[in-house]
Image (cartoon, rainbow, N blue to C red; front, top):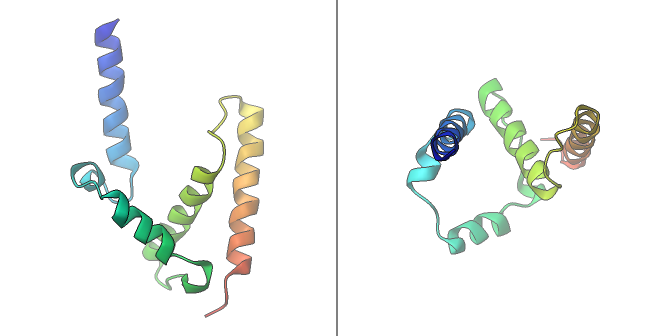
Length: 103
């Protein structure tokens, strides 16, 4: 049982590294709580700008979606509840994008 748990944790770590926008660099250089608080305090909706290039725009949208999902409850495992969760996240994403000033 221990080997299965260890294998699962290793696979989870590999998946996290593969799907994080910044890769494994997040795991190797953790920020201090003061730096995280300063980052959160400095980001306001009035200062957000959507990049014009497709890659940074996709990264911006992914970051915004992750920010919304972190404020919500954990993703459900039931398929029907997952669809409702996805629609809730999409609606909140559209609301935040509509509230941003055009630039």
